[in-house]
Amino acid sequence: MSSGPDSSPSASLLEYHERSKHRLQRYAPGPGGLDWARQPDPFRTFAGAPQFRLPLAADALATRHDDVRAGVLPAPAPVELGSVATLFELAFGLSAWKAFGANRWALRCNPSSGNLHPTEAYLLCAAMPGLPGGLYHYVSREHALEQRAAVNGPSGGLLIGVSSIHWREAWKYGMRAWRYCQHDCGHAIAAVAYAAAALGWQTRMVSTVSDDALAGLLGLDRVDDFANAEDEAPDALLWIGDPQARPDVDRLRAAMRDAPWQGHANLLSASHVQWDDIDAIHRATVKPATAESPEPVAPDLPPPSRHVKDLSFADLARQRRSAVDFDGVTRIDASAFFAMLECLMPRAGTPPWNTWPAPPQMHPAFMVHRVDDLVPGLYILVRDPSAMASLKASMRPDWLWEKVGPAHLPLYLLLPHDLRGAARLICCHQDIAADSCFALGMLAHFGAAMDAPWRYRHLYWECGMLGHVLYLEAEAAGIRATGIGCFFDDEMHELLGISDRTWQSLYHFTAGGPVEDRRLSTLPPYDHLSPR
Ligand SMILES: Cc1cc2nc3c(=O)[nH]c(=O)nc-3n(C[C@H](O)[C@H](O)[C@H](O)COP(=O)(O)O)c2cc1C
Image (cartoon, rainbow, N blue to C red; front, side, top):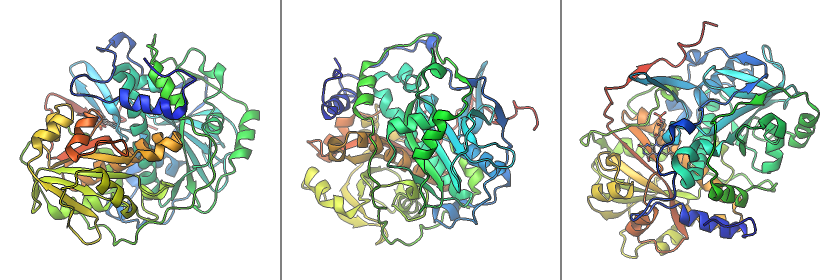
């Protein structure tokens, strides 16, 4: 049973949240098997929209990841076709093809639950050499922009729009899929923030815009253009430009209404399964227009400690992968662990947190297994000191709360213990949670979503952003990470001693020494394209 259209948004939210939990006794409602005949096409295209092939220019980008993560950005690149191409290549482009026998599938710079990629990306820009002004949809397979509308985009910067096709995830994961779409959106936001920063650009989320306005801006409400094709839900709008300036969304929206539009969305699957629960949570969390919130004040922190590997950002973004298995022996030293955690702290002007319009709501609880000079056990990183009292009150009263690590890192040991078995169990019995150096669950201030249910989506987005930092940081530290959407929610809460809904774990992660699957071969991302 799912809540009807008459339920209050907060009641629908609560119902969805509880019913989409995986439980030890039963998983959240799913399709009960994979219907391969219905598998959605991972690539959206708009037939009839003129296509602009982008140059593969990322190899020329000299920026080092160590600088980006410390907020030391290069001089802003000129806004021209080559830099826009690099932005899309490193945020949403293909990173490789994998092959097993006759099967081939693409990987991308942004990760996605089940590699299903519900996220679509759009660009709204003024005219630049090689690219007329307009609204464009990005096709990662071709590394090309499809012009949906010929309009004069914002001056002084770029707008990036992000949307989700829920069916792509629901096909495999059923009810819980909506959560994964939100995680993926958070990863996408972070991927843009990092790639833009590597080009010397600042990114801000346009947090005032309503979903209706965003749908209008991206053409997602053009019923005829999506006739018979799967809808896209508007998610986030990102401004790349002067952080003090704001694009005139009302003017752009009016311009979109009068613009000549082109293209029709492709049908991704021959048929669909209706997931009423997903429609219900989507309705409950629609975002209205909201007032501009004051910029969050980031704590004054020293730059994060450097990793031993100093990689080019372009290489790192394209080598990011999810580990499918860990070796169960690799250890990292505490300084590398702390350096990764330092990048989870909000920092002014530093990706991806420069993008985020609110103080941190997420606090990762770590199950540390193999970190030299750190006793195995349960730890928590309290990313905002104002959350401390509430976290303490919600969790077991006998936790140690012993400060560990550098003075500026709010990391606390709660319990020294071997948690490998617990981590495996909590993460749906997945060995990757136990064979790693550490696993974690991200605790959300769930109460924040109850007054304004659209914030529920933002909690997942913030999770995805944290996850993206961990993916890049793990690569830079010489290990590898994996997002974990499959976990038993209330088992994690029980471990922490959480018995109410003030704090809820919304996303899990793990990082360790990867074991490659040698049965798979890896092919370059864009060899299938003719030279340009
Ligand atoms: C939100 C999210 C949830 C995920 N959950 C799991 C999981 O539970 N188990 C797992 O092995 N991998 C999980 N992954 C990893 C994906 O399978 C992986 O990102 C995808 O196959 C694409 O591969 P890549 O990350 O190497 O590009 C998850 C990734 C994301 C973004």
